[in-house]
Length: 371
Image (cartoon, rainbow, N blue to C red; front, side):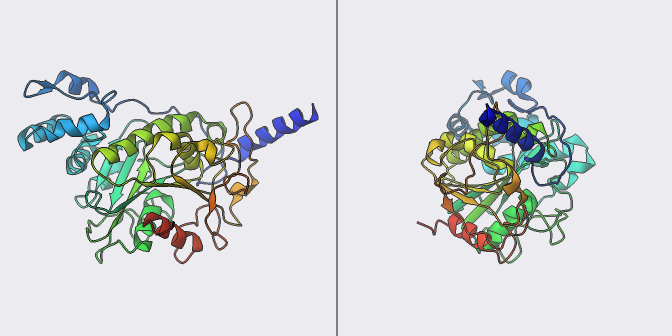
């Protein structure tokens, strides 16, 4: 009975502690955005040269890729102009077509908070204005990259605040840019969506590097610290979307990705692990991955974990009780993940800071240099 009481108390503490990157505020319950993008009904009613269009909800990304491969440029561009939100979010569609479609879709919203995403030098791979908005941005040349990494962030991330001012190397775009710079893949003209001040004012399109990085906010993240951050509801919805996203990368011929999963994003990665073809999964600042061990993730990917000495996530109890809490500490010896050095990491968001052991290790993993 005492053990049950201790577990219940620990789970209650987890509710108040588990969170993301924005600090210690009470969280608001979020409705997960799921399903195909807006405009799907009109897409389903359309055809291309008399052929039915692939259903965004049910067609496998490889089917989508095969469909577009069978169209000429005239048909592709008609679909792009008629259905930008669908084409821009359709896993398996050609990458340049998606970039252009999302530029059109962003402009069509008429909302100032999204305007910077439509800059001509940005590669927006996904954009969904529903709710707080979802967005994915490519840093580098995804079509020709030898290696691909995907940043999966935690709480308080969305399309509405994606370009908000942040400290450099924090936030999904800052992490993506820092990782690409650390791999030596960024061109001399730069490639990233954040300027040095973190204002998110542009991205280069250098193609000389071998690593492309995607900042992926493709799910509804928790807001602040509250029940959403302590349970797995939003993570389960996000895992479905992450698995489909990685299948879309595979369908267009991209290399098997490395998933860099921060905070609540590591819960998403843990639940998605068995359904992705990831080469490596890196959890950092993690409250748990909803698994007792790395082997329990049932993935062929190598699993890595990092936690800095001053990361407050260490104060979150590693329990899972009645759906609350996210389970074992991925950095514990019992979990069995490979450890990433992080002794010089400051706080919860310092893992991509220049000169840190963690960033150097992340870059080596991204480039496939670690065996």
